[in-house]
Length: 269
Image 1 (cartoon, rainbow, N blue to C red):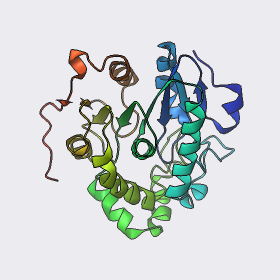
Image 2 (image 1 turned 180 degrees about the horizontal axis):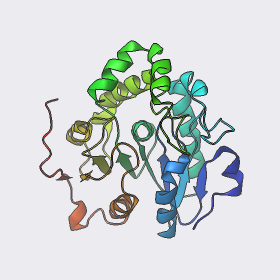
Image 3 (image 1 turned 90 degrees about the vertical axis):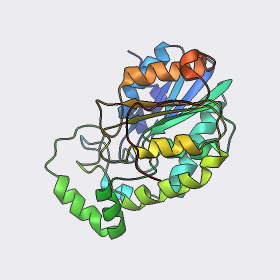
Image 4 (image 1 turned 45 degrees about the vertical axis):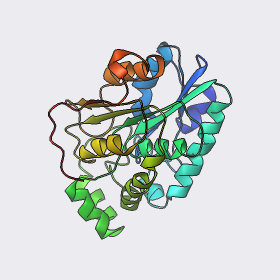
């Protein structure tokens, strides 16, 4: 098992230095790099250099949950973007090729990076365009819903990579990032791998089809998984698909304009 680099232990980031191809993976809002540990280890074993930085104002709690939702409430989109730009530039210094990706709003941040810097490809796992109906309602309520959700979820037994049993602490971020992503999709031309669960109960699965349709990438693939909800999908599936993206863009199973959407019915845009 690969170990977290010594200089990253303090902030829970993951840096696994291997080959000349770098992969920046961004964890989801309210989570920590821990949700990417298994995938990072597997990618490192394949010879890739993997960096999973800690998002700003995350990982601040000394207790078992690692984070504090009170800190998260005040974070801004600009802070998150600036933090990931610094992480991207840090990784880029030591690799020849660089791919960016993430989970949920971490994937949204990856798309944002791809419009500002040259990247070799994007790995999107559950990027947010449309939230489920319940979250759309709560985002309209604003910060007042934060306390409500915290009380509602305080008895859940989530461990390790969440904010005190509070999975959606900053509702404004959940609303702002999807709007921004819609605007930049036509600017995306690099190869893109989209992975989304048909059982996602936070980000509506039609988000993936929306992104697939509107990006201008000639090489793109949409992969559906069915045995996971929101967040980290099957690490083995992600591993193999990422390896195809990076090492086999010309392979038959990652052909231009390839959508493995199966029979999922998508709602109208």
